[in-house]
Image (cartoon, rainbow, N blue to C red; front, side):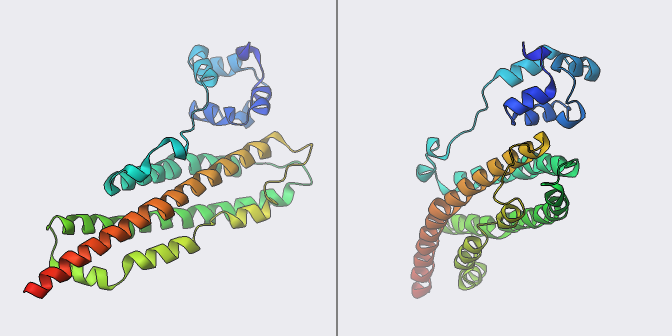
Length: 248
């Protein structure tokens, strides 16, 4: 039974179990040799609750399952902002804890440990700044265009925003920023795992790989759906704006 298995055994079988345990307040690396039942007793948790969480399949909504192309642009923005929230409040702090508490104890990963502990906090800070800037500039500008299309926008302010080519600049910068994980892939040698790699590094690499996949999906949604819709909206607003200007 799962409750009689050691934490290390559960995580070795499926590295994503570590994340479920983490959200129940159980860092796997602090309880590797204890059974699930023992840890629950220690933490004052009902083993049945944790078992249900562990036995439910890991649900990952695939990009192709969401008809984002047919969504209005405001819902696409809300979807992307929700992804930002999950990145900043859940996924990235969890990976940060894994990195912070990683002790290699293995010659192949001592340098990886040192490099990750330096690079990951820098990556995290840069990534969060990028997200907030995107929400404060790109998303805000698109919402301004939506308001302008409905006639709820100051013409002089709108003209200034459109003349700054904000959308085109954001698209170029975004394309240049698409490979945020290049540095981490470099120091991990594309997440290479030796046959005797420690369990902790397996968990870190699993989470980094999953996060990178989420970023790739996120970038595709922005580049292939959001930006084309936003540019079409901007062109429509420009036509309305210049048409009105000719009559004034």
